[in-house]
Length: 422
Ligand SMILES: Cc1ncc(COP(=O)(O)O)c(C=O)c1O
Image (cartoon, helix red, strand yellow):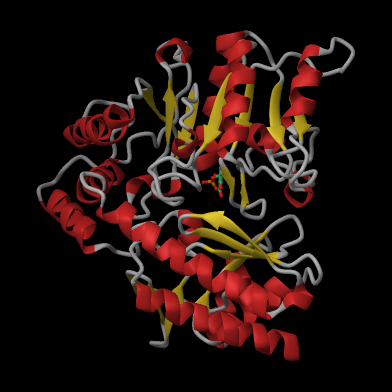
């Protein structure tokens, strides 16, 4: 540990995590570059775990925020009406909901993703009068108790201290191999009075699982899931907290499948600037809340609304961002497939969509963490995911340049060689 980190070691709780993987005091950042207190630059393939889809300190948002601050715009608003919130809702309606034919209402929850998931589960249970919820293997929905019950990873579940109830776990797409449609099991269990599975209020699912190891649900699987749930009056919740806001190419990761979820959770990159903000989108008939029945002090982070609106207006009024993601996605996938082909003995599997990719290695489950560590010494911030941390996770800003992407990939190659030589 360097002297610069001494105070964290001495005074910060043992719960701290990322500072252990990336042991540097970061000071400034712009675009895809982080700068340490000592002036060293790091290329960012992590993007704040999906919060910084438009890069760090995007000047378009900084300008909007500074102007808002200088005119003494409201910063904290609970859920009172403010001009910043009004402008955000109008922009979201015009640039996200209407072009996609979605009639969902917007619920502003507390600022974390887990806050949005808690609200989604609560309203689904209220709307249906049923308690059970189906969640999938390797799902990650947050760590507050309700959301944690839906999360799969035993490392997190073990910290709950109480039983995690009212969730039935079923296999995600691909969990039993490429040849098995796991929805056969879901459908059979729902229709068999002997299955022991209570009719659920909702099914909660990520279209692409982030923390669970970059597992991609096929469009056909999501379509069938939508049909199974719709036929039985079960609400479908799409957790778009990590895969949404352009990460997989389209604004929502479920868009490719053409389904319409009953409830959608959105957080992380929605504010664009990294300021905390979360939303739950509800089909009007699911919006059964009584006024004030679900509150929270920090539902009105107006600075987040200002940058969120700037993000929508600058990046979602045309297709430049989406086109750029498609081009960089092809480049990233091509490079990863090449790395896999060059190392057949490691059995790498490349998974992902858009700029959300994983390089999974089951043959050596410690390899991804060793590559990440080697990469950090070479100035690249890249994390791991998956139940065994066996997946090297590529999550660069959507605004990263091709040069930066290639530079990072070159570091990954060097780091792989160094990790294998260790
Ligand atoms: C899909 C998904 N849902 C929910 C969450 C929880 O969000 P937060 O950490 O802001 O509570 C995350 C966080 O990584 C996530 O990836």
